[in-house]
Image: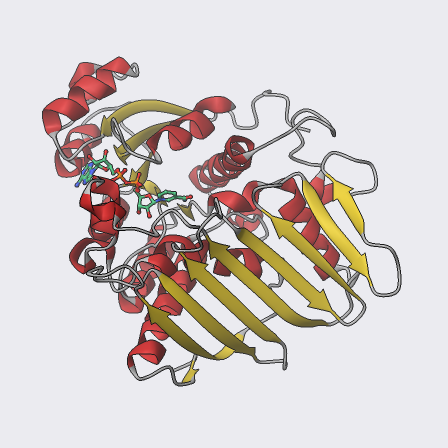
Length: 390
Ligand code: NAI
């Protein structure tokens, strides 16, 4: 159970790049990082507009002299201080992730980066290699995976409660982009601009979350080949707003992934159903405290967060006990707590501990980038099967 007592000796001195006023995702980063006092927000380059970024930084309690006009200046200036930053979170549009992450690693900083990690599998590999070489922690904010019922799902699969896994159905299909929202919304505009969003819109924006959820719950499944069809239903939109992917796994299991922004009436629609030879489980991010468990031939049951019948791994990050609703902010806080524990271990050179300690990392981010690349390749060639290893 998490009760706010410290888990590391000294809070990590932390900065943010992006996530400024009006951004969608900045606040949940700050709220989750600082919640258990494992991170201290001491600096930032919060905005593409330096003046607005400085004003914002001061308003959220950062010293004016440590609100920087850009990340390059921040890395240079902070390196001169004895109490300089140790870690940075990157919450800027996709097109900047690679260069900022790379610069942060070169500056000797631990990194937490938004998904999708970057545009190309080669860039992702480079970041992965650099983090390993420099012995730095590199987390990726697949923010839904800190939910406790996701940990329960993972344990149930690992312990064989479902039997051998046959089918994984993944989806993140919302209706929020059913019209040209990009016309009046800056955050939506960059998401559909290939120069800033990369080679995909909806697959990168939400499909990577669905993929990672599947990979986390079923780590034994390795993709052998995939087929993707993608399209844009909204006229004039440059990148796809809907995609279907079929997956062959190496052991004969099959998967499907649906990523969409035009699923009218659906708020988020991120669901995963894992089907084994004896039973299935199903989790939905809009009801994160519940997990359906359906054994063939028995009445279906709904498992609840915070209850004694769950596996220990699903109770470790309980903050208030069953019956009370925990949500996305708790899920993110659990992940940020893990990022801090990992960074602290790396700072103490306890690499043995890090070998078995789970958090969504740069390798998980890199797999998301490869997935997008392969989906685009398949779709562009007329929706053909593509070999995943090549
Ligand atoms: P946004 O467009 O709402 O905000 C971007 C922020 O970054 C703004 O404050 C902007 O001024 C700032 N910025 C842009 N370029 C910058 C630069 N070079 N230096 C400093 N600041 C800069 O974008 P949003 O929706 O917050 O998305 C940001 C990232 O987070 C994206 O990669 C997106 O895919 C990801 N995201 C992840 C989610 C998750 O669940 N993990 C959910 C939503 C977004």
